[in-house]
Figure 1 (tube, helix red, strand yellow):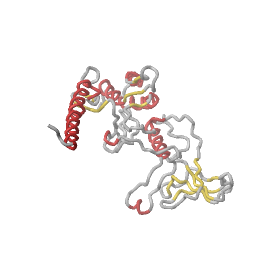
Figure 2: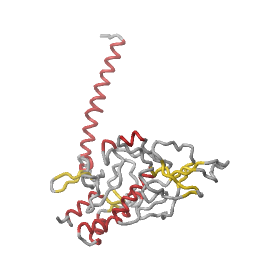
Figure 3: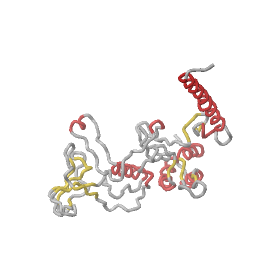
Length: 302
């Protein structure tokens, strides 16, 4: 029996649909699921969940915060790396801030925004500076970093005046500290620039005509607060911190739990993973695994 051309084409398309549905929609998913149940893979396929006393407390592959209800870090726990994923470590909103190294000027709230309680937009530099100050205050070390003010914002000036051919302003007529808002800070981080008094920025005022000048300051090039304590990972879900950041927190955690710092240091070493295949990446500490080990060995009293 001969079918018209259009009918043969539709029958061929239907056969292809049925075959591809069976292969790609049934056989392939079942094969992947079967492989995922193999020894050594089942835990990873299930989300690498970590349980404590029969209760799921997190994932070995996804970071989480260890803070109180008000967002204050719990002193008896090691703190994770900052996260820009949603409200923090949100697997459904995994992302970075997408701010580049030249993002150094904050957007201060205008008068209407300030009345509504909005806070404007913080630059990448100010985010780093504020985190460094917060970590320094928590750990009892200096949170100073290059190009940061003592108050924890980016040390950036807008310099006004006639520019020369090379783009500099040798004789400023006005200088504004861009990331320090008038009414929030009493005095700018630097009193004068090239003999001209520095004034805090006024919210809603346009400083686009000024020459943007970052001020390095006297902070050391290698600050006590490590880089992973002040920058978020690309995914926002990194469950690890560097051994340097863990070492910075060891004394504080030991004091909060009433144990010797050497005992906590041993747990840090036990929770440290080496380089992949011995040469790729850097050593890293799994924060969740470390905090669980602390609760098991040295529970918080009271």
